[in-house]
Image (cartoon, rainbow, N blue to C red; front, top):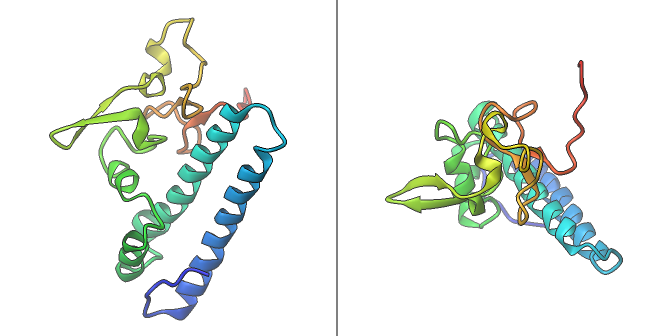
Length: 161
């Protein structure tokens, strides 16, 4: 169990449970690597789970204002969240970026370096629905996402809602 500093023990207990659930999911993916031959998809699963864990915590802190600043600082100082990814999500145009690995930074300004950062509307037919080969993200360009999330290689897209 991770030790987080918090004034509110209930907040700490719930967050520890949530982090434990994500850690169990990471372990499940890693253990499945021995049984599956497609390691690329396993890496994609890890990137997606990393996004989901960090987004869950980001939403609790920034959007729903449920987590305290003290617990957020504790999460950051214990490397339990991806500080850079959370910071990027606060920038206009990068609200749903899938990973810091699809960006390059110059003078603290992110520059897109992956196909998943190119809006679907301006892509060629050849690259329209192809995921980034390293991350597994098809599109994390603002406006392309579904329900505030990137479109991943395994996102179910239902036509006609």
